Amino acid sequence: MSIRKIFLEGRLMIEKIKHEIEGLGALDIIRYIEQQFGNTAVFSTSFGIEDQVVTHLLAEAKSEASIFTLETGRLFPETYYVWNRTLEKYKLPIKAYYPNTEAVENLLTTKGPSSFYESVDNRKECCYIRKIEPLHRAINGFKVWITGIRAEQSANREGMSAVEWDAANNIIKIHPIFDWTLADVEAFLKSNSIPYNPLHDKGFPSIGCQPCTRAVQPGEDFRAGRWWWEDTSKKECGLHITTK
Image 1 (spheres, rainbow, N blue to C red):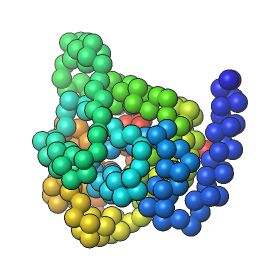
Image 2 (cartoon, rainbow, N blue to C red):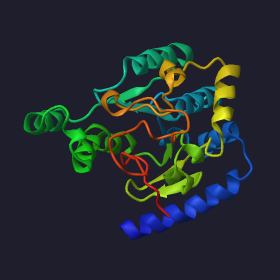
Image 3 (tube, rainbow, N blue to C red):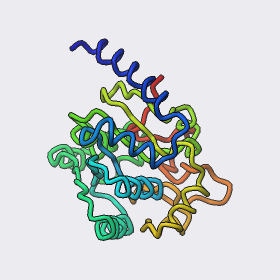
């Protein structure tokens, strides 16, 4: 099948899904995905609060969707803590995808362990090796990619839609809690006793690799703590790129 035909069929499916889930709550969207796509759906979790909500919903819906995480090799100890607590609570398998060993070895041998601080290109190179390439392997063969993205998380994400066609990966993306506010997420966590990363209570709204994440100050943008040394208003690693 040609790339153009895949693209057009993907677009048609997007419009169909948008129409069919219009007005549904997050749990019913998860149930819809289960009914329509079953085990051809996959969910990516970084164990942030939004992803913990989606994991809870998947468990409640008894979803067959696969769950994976990107183990970059540079995660916070607190991330491993909530990873373990999530496994204990939900008893759902979470597959870990690691970066290619040779690629990491070459990067550190030629540029050292902190090259990402030196330029945006270097940082993107590190993100590609540790996140983007493993992501391609993780979602390969699936029809739907479920995420915990919310619109208010950043200006870039406000331009996204609750259902999208990811042309880079030839996959449908669905964000069940896209319209939720931070208050909605926090209330849901509390009412359902969902385990979450304790760094969220220390000023970390967005948690990635330890060397690239800091707490944010009151009034700062949600993403200000990610790659804080870069002078850019759209801080994304490339996992979620807006496509219209």
